Length: 211
Picture (cartoon, rainbow, N blue to C red):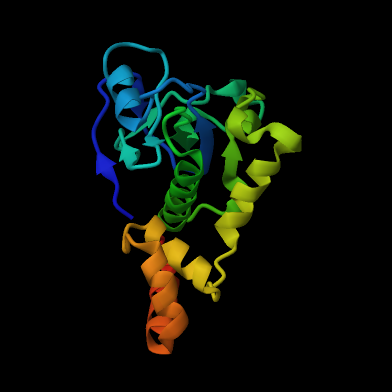
């Protein structure tokens, strides 16, 4: 997947130990325009006493910290109570701006998390909520119905089923920006078995690469 990189100038510390956790947050900011760029500008604009490694919205994944060199201030140290700290984790913030598409931002965060799990050899049990680090209600956007959406997020980290229905294949390709006219491709894949199999295998390959 494409990751746009910038670097915040505040609220980071030298990393001296391994990265053991990926901590999922949401920004809690539903204001219009409160996307990844807006949050980078805010946190890069002064000492906010907090920060993060990634901001994810419906249009992009933005990395704002060199997480192998520095850690950000995204979950507090919890006085060691829960074992999850800024110093041993990476923080991903999902944007919840009202003029964005949360479902797409959610899927972008899933893809990013899967990529980081592979890169850093982090097992699924160490992909956690901000809530798990400090008992803060975060990511609040996933907390309804006894954290039902969080359970969905975790499930998508391990389920990598090759899509078989034409609708699912077209959605996967359109979601990644590979095709634009979904209606045209729906009809094409229904009529052309060779195109169907090529599209199906393309999606499987992209999923395996975390794209």
